Length: 162
Image 1 (cartoon, helix red, strand yellow):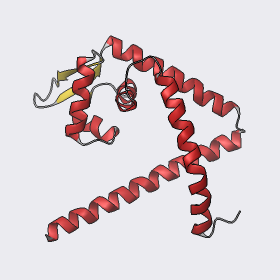
Image 2: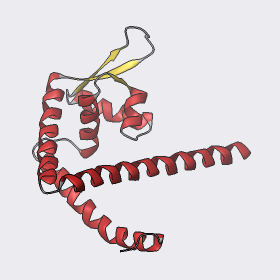
Image 3: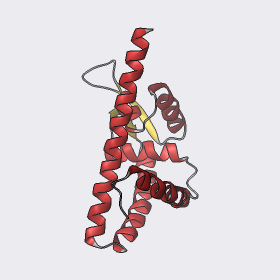
């Protein structure tokens, strides 16, 4: 199929996207079965599993939430004994978020379940397909970030005029 025309790409992608989202959402629910946490909470735990000790600002940026929403999410995770807040040794104004032992254990379990799922996917793809998939997903993320940055710049410019 010729994708030089954006209309062809858009049509095919519109057809693929709902099926892909259904699969990803089903798998996400499966990996969270019995854990008692939401997908948003899971994302925060996995980010902290990979980068423990982030500031609230850093964590909110990583999970794509406003800092106030991320603070509420962390409040719930603290109540569940999954994370703890600690002041920064160098700057008392900074609060960092760390996984508790229980939070690390839970995040590790989700990470293992997710790794199993992606290993299964990788085993069904050729090495060339794996490379193309990673490059394509990185390209999609890059473009979404560019569009988001452009949109934010336009909103800032618009607000400055008002």
